[in-house]
Image: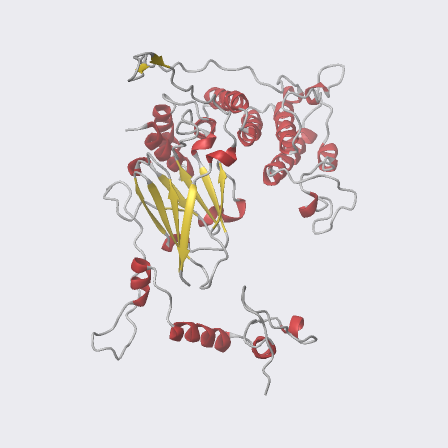
Length: 468
């Protein structure tokens, strides 16, 4: 079994909180790759099994591997937070707060090797001096001013905030909350309690990396057919040297009112190793072979693609299939309608905290793997018809052929929308539809009641007044 298959099963066991099953699976996966993601998952399992020394070793190794790859700040943030949770279990509360603070600083975009002096906040006897009140007030550099609220007064914008969005806002809030928990415990401890002592350093000691034996590859020399002189083969790019924009896949898509079908063109796809996770507005896929970067291995950040969708989908009703040259996603729209585009791709795993509970792991629709049966969507009804050929399942035809909805289906949709609306929403619909000459439809009465709804023609169409 490939390392990615062991890793997938191990990560699945961690998600199901089957800690004992997760460890040996991740052990097998990590024989071939020191992936920070896999190391952090095994660290979590060891922590829950009370194997604190092993948990700490994996967290510290994940930190170093992520730092060496140069593109793993999220894993570095998570590794510092994991250290904080382990030290808490060990009742080393001062060490726990230091690691949580370092997790916050990384989330704020601060340099990883910055000498911030966090661990130096001690008195003459070596006891930690940071207080619960200090931690609560430590929100001046909370990332993302546009979404910023005062943590002292939830719901109130902080006018003094001058921070920017870093992409790690949820990780910052997680570490901030953890500090209030740990320092709340410290507040109740005696002044000379061992838990107040600081023993930790910002950059942890690097554990010894596991050595993976690799067979020496024979030297290949190509000869020119004309003069039989050796021809030098072009050297492969160095790890981390190819920018994300060049790693992105070529895509194509088409859609109906119910589904959007996205094709991702990638050579070397192995369907049996591919993992696809659907959530309401994201799809995560791994491992992806990158033709522009042959150095990418399963478990690397670059082996993951996160697809940010233009609209919401129904994860349970979506599916995928793969060939050696293409991955095809059939995404069931949560609300019927047209999308301007399918969305965009981002390299790596992008946390989607709001949708964690909606993630569906789906096997390919044509797969025969017994270990992970495919999710079968509920059978669609066969609608009444006067056709001599009998009733037809139009939804099924649409899935197989990508046909557009008929005019009657569209009318039925708007009739149902109008029927289910409140009287105020119905007034808004009538006014907006009539005044815009059928080019706009609003259900917000407060928005349209005091203005005339202008005609908004489709792109490429010019509005002309009818001359009687």
